[in-house]
Image 1 (cartoon, rainbow, N blue to C red):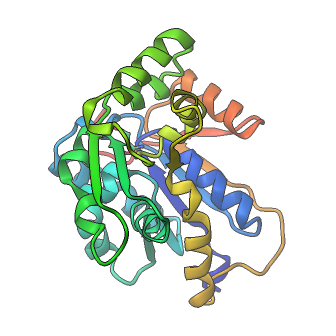
Image 2: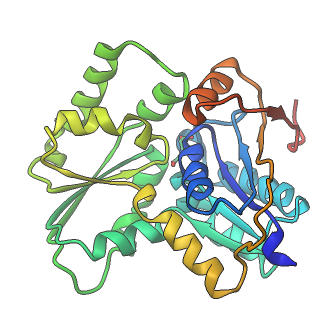
Length: 270
Ligand code: DGL
C-alpha cells in the first residue's frame, strides 16, 4: 500500500523543480506532490527559526497528502531545518535532504580543491565542510555565499549580459581560485549551470544534487520496498504559497508543458 503513495518535494521556489523533474524522469511510476514556498523566498535570507517554522508547516501539509517520502529539495532548509523535520516527521514517512547524496558523490571523486556556492544561510551553516569528513583526497574546501543568484533565477531575469556579469563577479572571488570541483549548493543553480560551465570553459567539474539525488532516493525506496510497481498514469501536483506569473512561466518552460499550479494557504498569515 505504502508504495503507491506520493513523494512530496519542497523548496522555497522553482529550484526544487530541478529535483522533482529528476525524480519524475527516473521513477516514472511515482507521483510527485510539489510545494514551492514562494511567499517566503528567498529562504537564504531568513533566520533559522523562520525556516524551521516554514518547513514544519510544509511537512505537515505533505503528510496530510499521505506522502511516503518527503524530499527537502532546498539546501538552505536541508542545512537549517533537517533535525527538526526528522524529529517532527518521525517514522510517518521517509525524509531525504539534498546535501547527503552530494557529499557521498563527491567523496567518491578524485577532487582535491572544492569550491561550494550557496545561499548566505547555507554557507554560514558550514554544513558541507562539517559533513565532508573522513579519509579522502580532498585537500581543501572553499565556500562562497552567492545570495543574488537564487532571486535572479527565481525572477526569470533575462538580461544575459547582466546575468553573466553577476555570475563572473562571484566566481572570480579569491576563495574560488584554482578549484577543480564546484558544488552548486543551492537547487536553483542547476538552472544556470550552462553559464557557470561557460565561465570555467568546461575546466571545472560542476556538481549538483541532480548528479546523485534521483538514484539515492530510488535506492532507499527500493531497500524499503516502497517503489511503486503499478504503472498507471498519475497526475503530479504542484502547489505554491503565492501565485506568480513568473513561476507559472518558468514551470512551463522547465517541464516543456503547461503545469497546473495551485495556490494554497498553509501558513497562518495573509
Ligand atoms: N533553492 C534553495 C536552496 O537550495 C534556496 C533559495 C532561497 O530561497 O534562498 O538553498
